[in-house]
Length: 316
Ligand SMILES: *[C@@H]1O[C@H](CO)[C@@H](O)[C@H](O)[C@H]1NC(C)=O
Ligand SMILES: *[C@@H]1O[C@H](CO)[C@@H](O)[C@H](O)[C@H]1NC(C)=O
Image (cartoon, rainbow, N blue to C red; front, side, top):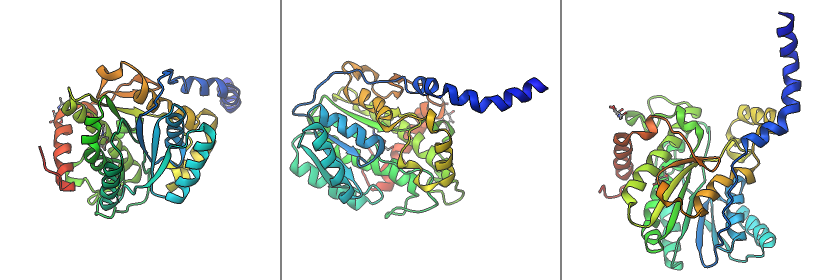
């Protein structure tokens, strides 16, 4: 009994001492590809902070022309300047994209398609987490609307360009949280019941299902697609929840920096020979296990059709 108590008292101290080791363990995945990207074009959504920013910076470092697709253009411009200065690559451009508004998504795509001949890398990185119940401009529940439907429409609109530019890649930032996710087709917009934490999980499950379904549909096109779990990362995702912020701070020594968090996205965007693994989910730069829900093709196909329906896209 006394021993147990002593151990309990010692635990925080032990954790504190072991923190650097644990952090190293948790951040084991590093993108080791040395691929350079001169002449390549990349789009990163939500690129003005956190993992998105680090991902964009690394792509710029390797010589790509990088579009930062951001809701806040002013903030985006500051980040673009910063990346230009750090990398010496002037081809870092900011474009307005609000994923909670299909009009904004369509406008972004229209302008992009008009101004660019190619698109080699699309990183669907932007996301919201645990925001209070709210709706997008089109009346979709915010998590489903931004994390899933917004990126679904964006990918859909840019797909032709991606195909023309093949070999090209689409990376979807999902999360380990998908394990708690379920697709409730009768409650897709959270009208009947809603929990902000679970809504995030549901939308992240949707990301994985879509990656799989898209991979199936893109077979032979030269466009490959991957979903990733970036790790538990310090980022602004927790902006809507003070509890999460508090937890993050408490465990901050175990948590990845945004730069470490960007590694798996970069691995999937860059590493040569990864094409045969299209449709897979990655964590720490390795193929990772997904939940039974995430492997269910029936759900994936139905979600695809429902999403097309909601967005007014032709179901094929
Ligand atoms: C990424 O996820 C979005 C949202 O779920 C989906 O629409 C899109 O098709 C996915 N793209 C890829 C390449 O997986
Ligand atoms: C997929 O999900 C459907 C609907 O929830 C279920 O009926 C079916 O058994 C699942 N299939 C597999 C292979 O798990």
